[in-house]
Length: 192
Image (cartoon, rainbow, N blue to C red; front, side):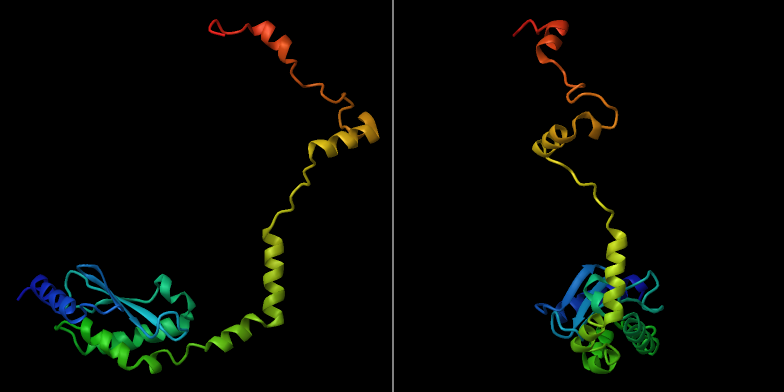
């Protein structure tokens, strides 16, 4: 049996087994995702398995860098990936996607044991050093906006200081266009 035929057969098996399972996602004919744990829980993960052209004779690609896993620390992602690859090495030559998903479901607690709990994550965020550094970064990131005056405020400023407050010493409205004179010079359109 060729690799393509084995992949097609494994695809059919996966689709029939996980039919109706909300945690299983069929991304493409060679890429599948499975969510381990409760939706939105701190100790949950989305495992993505994709097949190369030579799969199952080669290891599948395991990816944990999906948007759902943004709450996982990089150490946890590496730990889960290494455990799954170790499990997949023992299954070389046969379809291993179902076995990897089931292994992740059964060993969820040991795979995600390095992930801090929600309370620990909040305490890290609430630490004064981190809070101080984030406020400094936010202050650096925001450029100071120039205060914009309303038309009335500009008028009051001119009345109070006259042309002394102006940079060029030119009178207020020196660059305004006289609409009547402008139209008389350019001429009105023939249709008007």
